[in-house]
Each structure stands twice: as C-alpha cells, then as structure tokens.
Image (cartoon, rainbow, N blue to C red; front, side):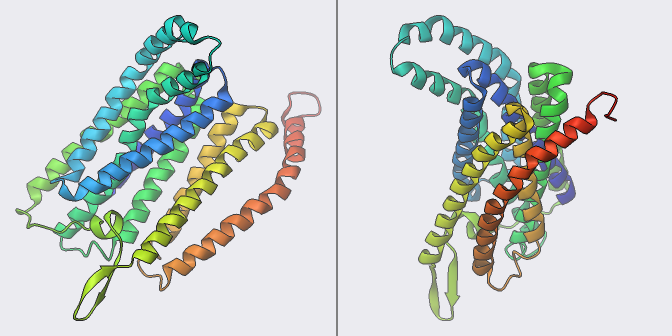
Length: 356
C-alpha cells in the first residue's frame, strides 16, 4: 500500500504541474502578457500551496483519517479542473465587457486585472498545497499502526514522498508543454489533469478501504507529524520536562524562508535567461520548471536515507546552502557559452544540405 500511495502521489504531482503550465497560457490570454502571467502563476501557485499546507498541517493531527481527506481534496481539485475552462470564459467575458471598460484609464485597472487572474487559480492552488501534509500524515500514521517507528522513519518517508511528487511534477510539465497542448489543446490538457486528480482520489479511497479491512481496530496513536511539521522540536533531558528549542526552530524557519526567496528569484531569472537562448518564453517557463523540480526530486531522493541518520543535519544544511549559491554564480559563466551551443545545434539540425 505504501508503494501504491507513492505511485498515486507521482500522478498527483504530474497533474499539479500540468495545471501550472496550462494556467500560464490561460492567464497570458487574460492579462495580455505571457511573462507577467508566468510570474503571477508562480506567485499564486506557490503562495496558495503554502497556505493550503499550513492549514492542513495544523489540522492533520485532529483529522481521524488524513488519507480520506487527501482523497476528498484530490477529487475537489479534479472537479474544479473540469470547470476551469468554462469559468475562465465567463469571467473573461464579464471582465472585458463590463469591468475593464468601467475602469479604463484609471489606476485600478491593472490591480483588478491581476486580482481577477489570481482568484481564478487560487482555490486549486490552496487545495494542492494541502495534499502533501495530508498524504504524509496519513502514511506516517499507518506506519505507526503497523508498529513501525514512524518518528524514526519520518525523514525517509517525507523524502520518498517529496521525490515521488516532484518527479511526477517534472514529467507533467514537460508532457503538458511539449505534447499535450499540441495534441488536445488547452481545454483537453485541463481535462486530462482533472481526470488524473479524480483517478488519484478514487484509487486512494479504494486503497484506504482495503487497508481498513485488513486492520485490527487501531489504538489511539499520537500523530507523528506533530514532531515533524506542526511544532518546534524538543530536547528531552532526564528528569526535566522537554522544552522547545525555540532558537533552533526560529533559525530553521528563517533558513526555509530565505531559501524560498532565493529559489523564486532563481526561477524568474532563469525563465528570462532561457527565453533569450531558446527564443520561446513559454517553453523556457516549462523547461525551467521541469529542471527545477527535477532537482528538488533528486535532492529529496539523495537525502531520504541521510535525514534520519545524519549526525549534524543543521551543519549539512549550511553546506548545502553554500553549494547552492556557488553553483548559481557558476551558471553565469556557462550561460554565456549556451548561445554558441544553441547556434551550433540550430545549424546542425536545420533541414538543409549542410544539416542532418
């Protein structure tokens, strides 16, 4: 069942990034600028996911069956995906026929246009953000019921799930950008992602029922995610009540926030840089997302066994941050050469007497 849920999470990640890719096309039509549409999709997608993850992580310990709620969330995401194309048409017509003419020439026009664009994709983004905490909480809780030390294995479980979701996302954005849109159009690509969400919901629900039928009545189990996501870490001292390591917790939250800020700057800069090399802003967006998320997947896969055994994970985190900055700077020198590589490729692959 763990393997099945991991495979399900791969499909979920693929559907999520198909949405992100296709939303950039829809919002490009709405706001009239693909580059701005890509920025707003990134902002709302990541912001909505963070909001959904926050809400889900705070409530997961009080949810009787997180996997059931995971299936419900996936189903709702799929249903919203089925309705998105028609909703976009209605909202666009209303905006361009009524709202925008009334605001023409005023400073509120741009604000309202961006606000409407954001609201179109916010509900699904929030729900997609809730999937990871719910899946993780559900799987860790199942491990606890199977008498596995879920807390000791939490780093490995989270690493594997993060890898699965990310590898699906990396493939999904490429499939959407380079094949699905050309094959079935914008609406067909949306319907494909929505159907994947619905299939994921159904498979998760059936798997949950199968697990319930083979389980004895579970005892009350303390939610393993409390120690992983929901609150500060604690240090147990013999004879002394455990207290949160508030300084370390604050530091790690700050590092997470700073890493996210840097990552977002990387994404925006790399889209612009790749667009100059490729000559296509839309494909630059999809290639950047795929490479970026593939890197996240490989990083999660590499750390999955080390997360629970590393003697000094905070020190390793610092080394990783230094390496990230060093490699980012190194890409500037490589980027200048990429124009020559692309020119050679275009010349070699051109259909002429000198080409292949």
